[in-house]
Amino acid sequence: MLEVLSSGNCTEYLYWDSSQVLARAVVVETEEEAEIKLINVSRHCRGSGIGSELLSRIIRDFQHKCLVVWTFRERCGWYTKNGFRVKERRANLVRMARGCGGEEHNLY
Image (cartoon, rainbow, N blue to C red; front, side, top):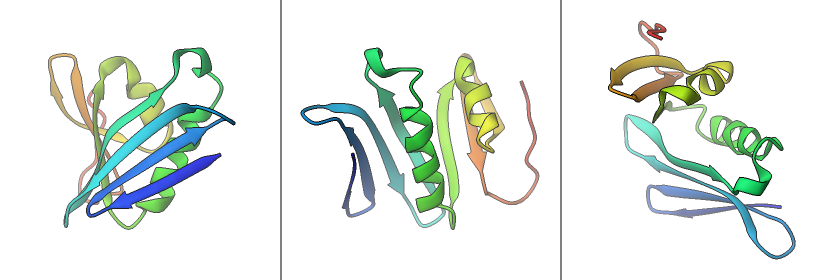
């Protein structure tokens, strides 16, 4: 079950089984963009599609915004598969964006 909680400019997504949270995502919205601050899936549930389901819901909920995320380089393929493009790199961290207009390019 997916539970969505909103408070001010913060939206939290909790993916539950019958008794515990299996995954959590947090998005903070500003006037210009929505930033994914966190997508975390419990270790024993990784690879089950829960993270992709959360990301799809976030994309749908914030389709009217420029959606951005800072992530580790190893996760770029997953975000790219979901329509994100690399915008900036800092060491092992990569800023990716989706739906932001302008020149989008892939740097990795």
